Length: 239
Image (cartoon, rainbow, N blue to C red; front, side):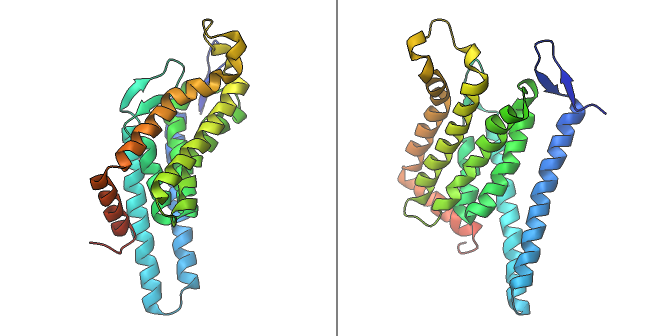
């Protein structure tokens, strides 16, 4: 069974079987990591009450993380601005991936972000496969970087700080891919003397714009209160 087909221009595309295979791998990885974490929680817990608490908490994590990933993936199709060579300003799709790290810290945040990177590869990677390094930079590493938000989950204003750092991480990996693989697509009208900053300008034009809009939304007081409420619910400390 073929998972990839080679196009005339040298690129590779996912076949229908390849798309299904990637989706199955993403789902199995997410489930496997969740089960392993649950077993580890139970192994290190002492007493039936603590075991039960650990198990319930893992189920809560799975439920909230799954919903957040589903929202992120769905909103990634809502493209407010679509760039000509890939990339879009979406309806805050990156935020919902970053929320998982904000709720549960870097370990779960990075695992879920990696799962999301596989989903994004399936969504947008089928027509943009040049090499394993390009796939890693454009998709696997770039979107997994959204899990960096988890490193700031305990900080004051941790959501905004973590979100900015996470998007910056994705920006760096994506720009790396741009310098290595996509410079040939620089428009002729772009000044040649400024070609070194073209990937920065191009990727900021969609990633930076979405980040700015999202941060502005997060700074609205009712939104801040709602985010705090959802975080309490995600951690089982609120109603």
